[in-house]
Each structure stands twice: as C-alpha cells, then as structure tokens.
Image (cartoon, rainbow, N blue to C red; front, side, top):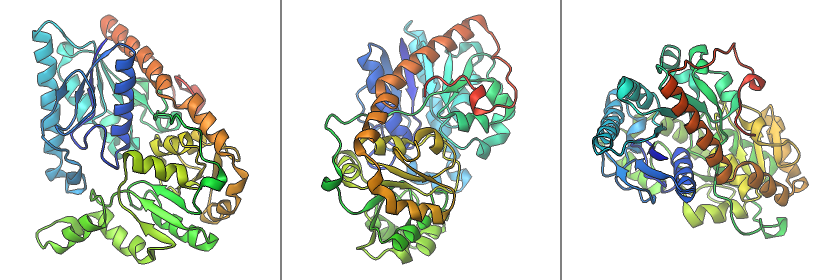
Length: 404
C-alpha cells in the first residue's frame, strides 16, 4: 500500500527527547516500510525519519506553542492539515494516489480530511489522548464512512462518546523498538528509579518525589517542562520579560510543586533525553514510575520501560492495568501510600520477565500487522460505504481489540 502517515506539526519524527506519539510514528513507519509498503510522512521539516517523502508546513516543530493560549496554537494545526490535503490532491493528480491516510493529528486531522468527502482517501485516525478533553467534537463527528478511528487501549475507547465508539474499529497497543541485548540484571542497575514524562500535575511528578523520599529511593526526572527541554532553557525563558512561559500552567505548577523538592542528589531533573542516552537510562534504572492522576490512554513510556527489562510502578489508572501484570512486570497501586510501599518490593521483579512480555506484546511487527489489517478494513468500508457497526456503551471486553 501507499500510506500518508500524518504525525502533525508539533515535534520532529523521530523526536529529540520527549515525544511519545512521534516515537510511535517512527516505529510504525520503519516497520511498514520494512514490510514493503510506501510511506510518505507528514511532520515538521526537521524530521529525520527515513520515508518515501516528507510533507511539512513548518521547517521546525511547533511543540513549544502547545502550552500557549488556544488562538496561538490552532493555526499551526490547520496550516499543517492544509499541507496534508495539498499532498493528497497532488498525488491523486499524478495518478499515484494514497491508499490510506493514517493521521495522528488530534481533531483537526479527521475533521479536515472528512470535509473532503469522496475526494478523500480512506482515513484512519489513531486516538492518542484522553477522549473527554474534546468530547464536543468526538460526540458529534461523523466520518461519513470514510474516516474511522482506532484507540491505543480498550480502556481509552470505552470512555469515549457513543458516536465515536460507533466509528472506532478497535484498539492497537502501542509499540516500541525492542533492544537486541539482554536486559541488565539487578546487580548492573543503579539504585535510582526514573520518571520519564513531561513534568505536569496529571503525570503526578510530585507524588513520585514524595514517595521516593519516604522510601529512601533516589529519583531521576527526565522530560520537558512547558515544552522546554531542560533547566537552562527554562531559566532563560523565565529571565526573558517578553517570554510567556511564566504563565504556562505546567511551568507554574513545576515551580511551585516540583522544583522545591529537587536537591540535585536524591531527587534531580535532567531534562529531556533521547536516543542512546534514554536507552542507557532505562537500562540502568531499577524501575520506571507512573504516579498518574489521569487515565493514561496509551503508555508509550510503559512499553519502553518493559522493553528495556525495567519494571514499572504505577497507579492503576487508564491503560496501566492492561499493560502491567501486577507482581510480574511491575506493581499497581491505588493510593500514594500503596505506591510508596511498592518501592520497597522492587527486588521481587525479574527484568527478564519484563523484556519477554514486551517482545511478545509490544514489538513493532505486532503493531504493524494490526495496522495492516485495519488499513484493509477502512479501504473496504470506504469502497462499500458501509456505516460502522452500532455498539452499546462499551466495556473493555465489548471492543474488537485487535491484539493484547
């Protein structure tokens, strides 16, 4: 097939440091091309992902804008979508049309492509987010038999509006590259545990800090704050009177609730990491922590941790119970006290079991096979103009989950 893979304008593919969605797009694009498909990537112009073409509206990613007020953000998404539509028309005019457009651009991607009507190729949109935050759109959107959705976990889709679930073909767990080397054993790992995410209230960074302090476990925080990659960038922005960064909610929360708890030794923030540095950090850490305050939809970092053979300690929210086998690949907690207690039991978990689970469930070939089947389904549906099957209010078991 010929596929237009739309990652959106926010970060390059693959990302430099933070970027769960973009990492998924890079992994999927690489595997689909390995399997013989042609994949044209739509992303920021600084993307270095190998592909069969690049469509971009901007020379660099617009991620730093995401924390800005809505009027300063929405134009970037639509400018990118305009470039995607132009590419669709250009390839069709050259009599080499796309078989499928796979868009990961939230709301704007499916909305703009659906507006093309019969001129649009079949469209599959992956839902990477908490579906309640754009409920007005998902509760009223009609893809007209040409735009369909897929979730990243059954629990995520089950919480979506009924109209969205009627147009959703199932859920495909996220995938990450699987390291070739065997996981490090307990004696090869540092004493510290890791939080690998952007620093914000929903991710529960402050919970991790308090739990690690109480358990006497050193903590490393890796990830951006308000779109800023590290301490130097944050301090430079805060020192600039013209910068809007001080008003960003994530920055205000970090300065009030996280920064005072950092001492540079037992608790330290190292900023965003990527590539070999991130792989080494995951491999050395005793565990990766997910002290979530929200229902995580997909959990790319969870899969990355397990692929490195690193156990997970998490709040039992969102997709985490689907990804972590309690007592085998990690521990799931319902309270901060339970989360703290789990940090004293890390020696009970086997890195080899974590890596074996990741290889079986989260390898790139598993995700690519699932998406190949979904691409074929959306093409058939678009050709036959069959409306998606009606489903009742979903429980996890009701959904046609593509693979666990």
